Amino acid sequence: MVLGCRLPWNFRSGDGLRRCRRKSGTERASEEIPGVQVKHSANVEQSEETEDGGMNLISSYLRQADSSEQFLKNFAKALKARNGAVARLFLTPELRHEIKPQVIGVSTPLKNIDITPIDSNQYQLTAYFSPYGEKPEQLAFQWRVAVEPESSGGTYFITSLQRLKDVTNKAW
Image (cartoon, rainbow, N blue to C red):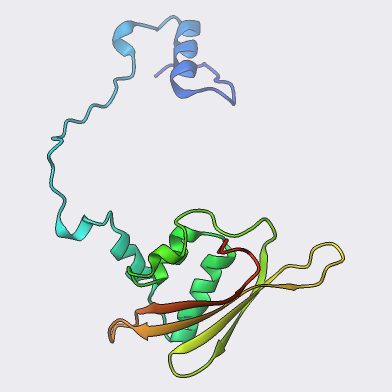
């Protein structure tokens, strides 16, 4: 350890350490910080649990809720955050193509998403843009979704998504 050497607040670890050693006269080639090398086979087979890159594990965690209404509130949060990668995990794998796996939406943020029950497993989602300038809250989109429990463990899926109105040209 080199004592009495002050490093600037914006130093990069390797550069700062070398500067400090030069000032104190302790720099030697043998003291360089070694790199980490990892050897692995290019033919490694993934286990069944990780074939999807962990997406099913993340999806099942996100889809846990006390009720289908709570599940839809969580889905609405992902939509409001404009996170398509997360929002699509609430859908069945067959429906995931409906939402892009990227930043979704338009530049005007969503202020509110109303969730209205239609029947025991059908809901209407109505999203509104935040007020902009002199314009009041305006409709962004209206969807009808079906929510069904995956199992008795409190996980749900959106099994149907129908776009009723959409002024965003499918930006969400």
